[in-house]
Each structure stands twice: as C-alpha cells, then as structure tokens.
Amino acid sequence: MQSLLMPFAVFVAAWITFRPDPKVTWILAIPFFVLAFMFTMNYDTIHLVAWYGSEELPLRYRFAATWAAREGPILLWVAWMALLSIIWRNPLKSESEESRLMRLRLMNGFSLTLLLVAWILQPFKAADGTGPGLNELLQTDLMVIHPPLIFLAYSLCIVLACIGISSILTDTKGVKDRLIQVARPAFFFATLGIGLGGLWAYLILDWGGYWAWDPVETGSLLPWICLVMLLHLRTRPGKTSDHMWAGVAMACGALSLFATMVTRAGGVWAVSVHTFVVDAAGSPPSDVFGRIMVLLSDPSGIEVVIYFLGILQLLGIFLAARLGFEFSKYWLALLPAVAVIGVIGGGDALDGFPHTLLVILGLGPFVEAGIRSLPKGHDWKWFAIPGVMVALRFVHGMVLFELLSLLFAFGLIFEKDRFKGWGWASGGVMLFLAASWSGMLDIWICAIGMTAFVSPWFFADENEEFKFSFKERSTQQR
Image (cartoon, rainbow, N blue to C red; front, side, top):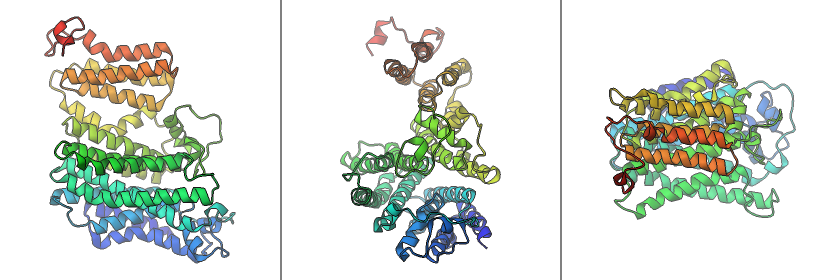
C-alpha cells in the first residue's frame, strides 16, 4: 500500500499542475499525514519510524519525529504548499484569471518537484533494523513548533515568488497589493519561527545566547530580511516599479531555497548542528558552491541541486524580464524535469554532469531571452567572453565565481544600450580586481578576465552604431 502512495501523490500533483483543482489538491498532503500517523502509532516496519521513533516517546515527540530526518520535512513542505494553494485558490487582489492560473500552476509544480524528491528518498521503505531513536536535543516542545513554522514561512516565500513570476509573465497590474497580502503572514510566521529557534538555542542547545550565527540560523534570517524589504517598499509609493516588486518577491523565494539548501547540505556547506549530509571523503573545494557540486555523487544530490537550480532560475527570470526580453515558458518545467531524472536514475543521477552546464541551465531564461533579442547580423564573436569565463573556471575551479562572471558576461553581450553595457563590463572588471586584491585568484587569471570584459570597446568596428573611445572627450564627460 505504501509503495503506491508516492506515485499516486505525484500523479495528482502533475495533474493539478496542468489543471489546478482545489478539490483534489488536499491529496498532496496525504503522504505527510500517513508518515506522521505511522510515527505516532510507532509503526516500526518502515525504516524512518524504526530509526527515529520509539514507544517510550511522549505522543507529541513521536509526532515531531516525523520531521527529524530528510524525508519528513519535504513532505511537510508539500502539505503546507497544498494548504496555501487551497486557501488562495481564488484570484488575489487585482489578479487576472490568467495570472491566477499561472500562479497555481507554479505552486503545484513546486509541490510536484518536492514530491518527486521525496519519492527518490523513499520515505516508506521497509525497515532493515532499529536506530538510536530521536536525538535528545530534539526531544523538546520547541521541536513540535519550530520546524513547521519555518517551513510555513518558506512556503509563503515560495508563494511570493510564484506571484512575482506569474505577474511578470502575464500582467503586473496590482502586483503590489497581491504581494502585500501574502508578505504579511510570511513575515509574521518567519519572525515567530526564528524567535523560537533562538529560544531553542538558548534553553536546549546551551549556546550561551539566543543567536550564534550558525549557518542555518543565518540562512533563515535572509528571507526574513528580504520580507522586511518587501514590506517597506510601500514607503516609496509610485517610485518602485512593478518589476522591482516582483523581483524582491522572487528574491524571497530564492533565499528560502538558499536557506533550505544550506540546511540540507549542512556538512558540505559548513559545520552546523542542523547538518543532514556530511562529506567525509577528502578535502572539499574552498568554494562553497563548489562544495555543493560534491553532492552530485550523493543519494541526496538531486535534492540539493534542485534548490541550487531554483535559485539560479529565479535570478535568470528576473534579469530577462528586467531587460525586457522574452523567453520560453518551458523553462518553468526545469525543476520537475530534473527531479524526474532523479526518480529514474537515482539521487546521484547527475554525478559527473558538467558544472558549467548546470549553471547555464539555471540561467536558461536569461540566456535564451538574450539570444532571441539579438538583432540580425549580430557579431557572434562576442560570445567568446562567456567562453573565456568558462575556460577560466577550469583553471580556478570556483563554481560561484564562474556564476558571477557569466552573469556579467551575458549581461554585457545582451545589453542593447552600449553605455548600460559598460556597467556590466565594469562589474566584471571589479569582480576580477577584487579576486586579485584578496588573493583569491592569480594575477594572470584576473588579467585575462578583465581584458575579456573591456574587449568590446578595444576591438569594436568603426561602422558599429555605438561610438565609444577611451580618448574621446565627449565620451568621458557622459
């Protein structure tokens, strides 16, 4: 029976992603409640209950043990997303029917992705022994309250991102009112969840204070700060564009994914009491995002990579919309598609997949929109600039640095206004200057990178539409 539960939930999630229907959306929460019931009844024939549950635990701690491992929190997140999809099934303030359908499809699509990830992890697999039970530090009433509140806050941040994307792709009219409607409860639950986490740290973990800058603690603070920014955009009425409102909302979603990624890759990202994965083989790369790539060979690799791709995709969508470019909506199916690969090939299905291609796939909406916007007769030799950034990554090996340099490079070659393009080039030059000054990269690598970013102005043809020269006085006075 349990073996059919996850495929059934995935099928329903896929159905309502294409045809949103609140009458069946509640089915997505069934796997979580079944798992919680098994923990409560100490149904130790499945692995998770045998490993983390116990008859000796009080009833509330048995229930809280549901989210003590990797699988439970994902199913809890799906349950919250299903509830929010039902609550906001009707149009929000000033929301068109097209925008509403797009928003619900995005929300249900994210739930589908999470269910596919949970299916990879097999939450209902048979027990093969008994475990140590629930960690003593987790046997507290705060364990019952804190994690659900945090995931509710993250779910609301994802809803904000879905509103931002649907508004950009359909109609941004009234997006401010829609976002405020969701941002208020998101801020409330995020504040409450973080506050209870600090209390837990002080009373139970004995950190000597309410805040110790633990990586996961700090990660959870980032979406909270973004929510504060979103709510304070109202103090500048008429001065903040609808696209900027949508962009900040998408940043809330991206940062909630980032906070989750830090938690789920705890031992690889940094030392944390919230660690789920520990990489004990060899010394990891010095670049934090490079350490994320280490997980491609881990059974949990697909999950962490999906969070990483989600962050990049939100960034790519915002940049494409900000520059006024169009892109295919098929990119929105990227995360479920990657999760399906994991279901078919296992959690380590992307082991050996080129890191650069992952970055470009994440930025796909921005890259495609930029290419489609290029005029006929565009000089394709300028695509050598991103090529140089990719080649340099094989030398320095830093995925994060490659991501940032590619952002500036693509922004430069896609920018129609060459004087605005100079801003992208300046950003790329400063990036390599900072890397040189800090000793992060060798001087010769930085010199190549900076030369690539200023090359359009050194090697531009005289008959090109834009006129720029380092020697012309009129240019310097702009």
